[in-house]
Length: 445
Image (cartoon, helix red, strand yellow):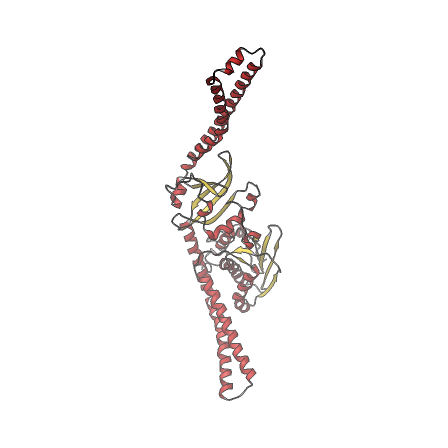
């Protein structure tokens, strides 16, 4: 219906000229035939030229009107043929232009609950299909496309149904020629069940890692508790025996408060690592994530006599990420490093962060002096259930999940190493765009 209205609008001008011309000829004939009489009795060719001119103009108007009609008819038939093919696709397909949804095939309508919804008025915004919490991240991916570059995008995000329910989807979008103009085509695949299974796997792996560190964590919590007990006894003794200066009593009480804060930090870190929660992308300083992970593992490194060296660059750009999951990646790599160094004498762990000039982001490099891995291991190290540890010492899922988490953050992770030469892991994460920091977004997608 909308296309027919557009065709009628396009034909108004040429049809107007034709109607005006016919009206003129009719008026000449009705008003006494002066026009014909002038031609018959004219002493020169003026009347005939006038008639010829009108006929030529009328013919040209009709010719261009037919071309215009044929052009619009071809565009409509092409669009209808295009839609007919997409309608049968098993994958959800959405077409939009300038944020307005133009077409949605049966699979997309069923997935999002838009059966029977009228798209002809162009009032459905493409952004109403995406979860508001994912708008910032998606818009940051379309910067180049907004500048006119034909960029293909592939990402995961949450969609919102007409009933307000949230579902996970894998999205591929690219620019197409539709209806005589450029538009964006989105392929949508429901991965809600797959995502739920993945989240359960991540959670289970995190609990398994914490289970391996249970004894160390218990010892870590026991340290501040021991300090609290000793400082409390000291204050009690001074009060009962009226000894010690007020400043000494105050210092002991302050020490108790510090130890309580230390225990609270450990418990908070454990709670964050063990809880199951939806992904929460926020702006964060990657150095803070590194420091928190090192603080959490500090006792283990001390227990295994591992020297830790850090070189954290100042003024790094912030990244848009899930703090808990990024810390899980760091925790996994550093724990693997600690385990790989148990059988060597020289135990050194180095962590550095830097500005990644190659990818306009942040680089994190973690290297150890452990037993390393072979070239064959390097090709399979991120494969699920593959492990270089002894049987029973690992699930083989840590690095696979780490890779998945980094890819969800649009980053990369690489590993280098050799037998007996330690290992080095390099993580690259994109810097948050200015529009993500300020919240000022423009464009489509």
